[in-house]
Length: 507
Image (cartoon, rainbow, N blue to C red):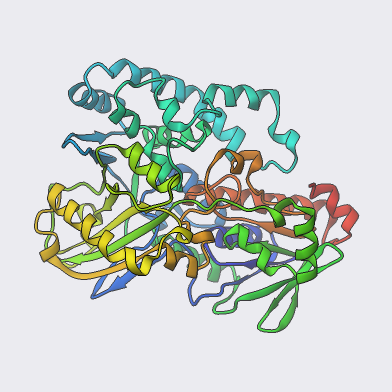
């Protein structure tokens, strides 16, 4: 059994390792000069910081899947963030989030007195359904509608308030608008507005309290270095700077790919680009037919929000800062409405600051620090970033200096920006930073699945696929894909008989 992985992001790497551990021959094709996709470093001026994800959630899921890939637990050092992070509100209120329930209750009693019982109810209710929800929605693929629309799932969706927004669901427990923000802003981690993301994602803010927020020593991109060692150890061939120009499809069966003008034949192909872009690899005649028929090829997907990212190396430190901090405007709801509904840069933007120097002495040279600022913005199609980036950067840095980092602008030794325009050039759909948006009609059953089409022998993994975005969740999707491919091959061997394959590849 010979499989090609198109794209060397975290989903592609994990799929390759899991398939190799199952005895399959695997090769990875990556268009750029390095593996990792969104997991990378931004470097310059003697400084280095994570380019993409920074917050480690669901550590046990992460470590469990890595163990299945062959990675020993001691290959990585995870450090707990305590407090998990601080939220700075527009009126000057500062609220810290804690994993420990008693510590969080104490914080609430001081900052939001009278809301303690709501928090207790929240923890009680969510703890009852988290394991059930994880099993039902994160650990299963929905290749048929009936796999999702079970009586048990429908009852669970009702408990989760799936047809309400995450922010609306937080209103069941809290009266304060600021506290509602604190228990719903986590949807921004996956590029969705708390007021538009369905309640099924309320498992995300609860996961912080169940498992904590962690920092990976050396940065999240350190994970790629560890996985690359395992790829070499398992003898997996990696083709860098070798983009795939087309999938080779014969009679609705994917039998390989075309790269650098040469046809390479495989028994299966796994696509790990940003999912809607898979249409660019279909042969022209097949693309036209599928667009006419509708379905995945004819569907217009909504991209997630974009990000403007500011990376800095600084000649000083801020010892009173936390590792992770959120700076919110006077009204987060109004600010996010400007992004997600009006598709413009908000007058009063929110932003997140990552300060790894507070927990990792090797994150920057002695006495210095690195900072990463993330500003939620619309995806690339709405903004001219050649004009908008610099003014927005100045505004955010002024706010950061005023609200938490005195002397910031005079301390800068290195600074670089990334915008949604850069994300689009890197292959992220619509310039969104988190795959397709986690809205109702792009979630669960309605999200593209690991078997994305009626093309036999073709599979997909990544942030735009079910079960969704976030590094551990993308890795879980890779595990679903690898297990499904193994199941097919056990049933059919290396058969590419279309009738046999379609029996398992339904659509």
